[in-house]
Length: 231
Image (cartoon, rainbow, N blue to C red; front, side):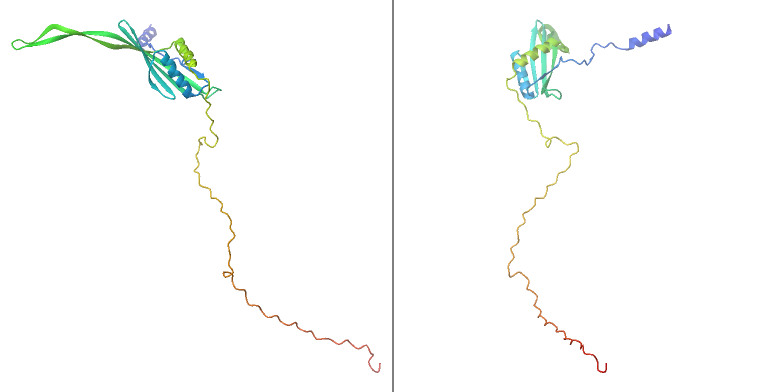
């Protein structure tokens, strides 16, 4: 019984959540296209204009528009936003993210009475007044109807041009480096020009040494072959 009462007390302290996000992997708010981001956002702008939206912002990667609805005393306003970004996977080059927010306003009337100043009695309020009407915001909600966004994408496809822009892919030299290295200018080799030497600039040759006469060797007489006397 004690555990049951404790659980009930803890349950009363936790507020109920009316809004929650599941983060499901669905393509309700996104769609991929073959065209470039600029072409896709231009088609989104034309699609919104064709449905009576007032475009307040139109750039190469984002479009914002607004549309008003009136039903008796209730006023509704839908603000639409489309963002065009390059696709990171697959063959298609653009992904469009869309989001629509619906605001609801209610007409509120307030009575105002007029006051009349009398010198003897002071200020006196008389039931003579007017009724002022004002719109009060009572709700704001993101539209989650998948058919609503599906119809928008179908209209967007009608305004896509036939020619598809294909931006040139950056080369390896233009891609950013993870660790940039400072580049220094390489020296350019100069041309080897043979120097022009003048005769006056040449050094004087050394003085010539006189040639020595060849040394004559003495001639030796051949030895006699006669036998010595008395032999």
